[in-house]
Image (cartoon, rainbow, N blue to C red; front, side, top):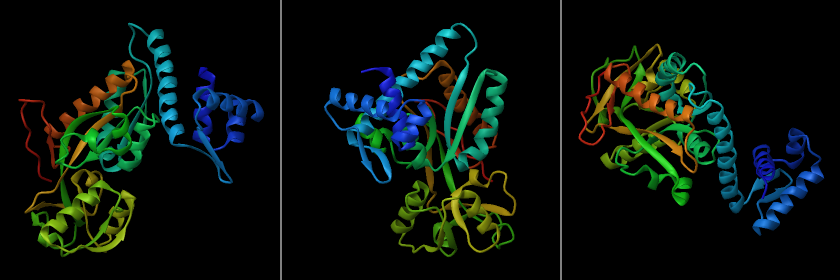
Length: 330
């Protein structure tokens, strides 16, 4: 097995086409196909399935893809770490953030990284938590903030793709309360609201695959309330726009309100709804020095944002026997 074969296979899967990969790699298509055939013969498994729509990894191919990505990434990290041994950390560090967390954390992280590690280039991917999870598991990004159920003591056990491999490293950061977000001119102001009262509002919510939506659904079901659902939207910006227009309300974290106008957040009580925010890495290979510094910086900045009240409605998850910070109210 050769490193170039790993590179070839990874590029084919990423592009979904042997011909496109051949053009991208500047190699003749028959030669590329021959290399993959040799790889499959050596492993004695089929790594790819071809169809009229292109090429996709088989089940064995998905496993091989994750390991191949990890090997290639580790080689690149080795080169960077060796070249800058004893120097300031350098290189590209990829970080995933769900949109609501990115609105409050990304500016502070970029500013902090620029001040402390000017030779590190951040690459921030903003998406839904479930998609970011897949990117971490497949080695496409080095780390990501993800959302978890508040009662999930071991996030590794819940996350599907990582469960089989056991290679997901999970670092709990904080708990976020969920709020009823309405247009600022609606009655009720910023007073607390019960779940029963929140159930009287027509809601615009993320899709059913969204973890926050699942937490809200469970809370409604447990309390015997029926949700009046106006629409399902997977764009946070569009959800906020619809709510600001006065058409409906939504239930999200207070961080989703950050930087928005025309919205107010009302804390939901009886019961309080929360979600856990964790920092995840796929630990087949160690993080580079630069990536480890950024991971530590994320933890530090998250704590500062909560302690100073800028990350409202958040509660730090302490180290064992550590202090606990009470959430601020918006």
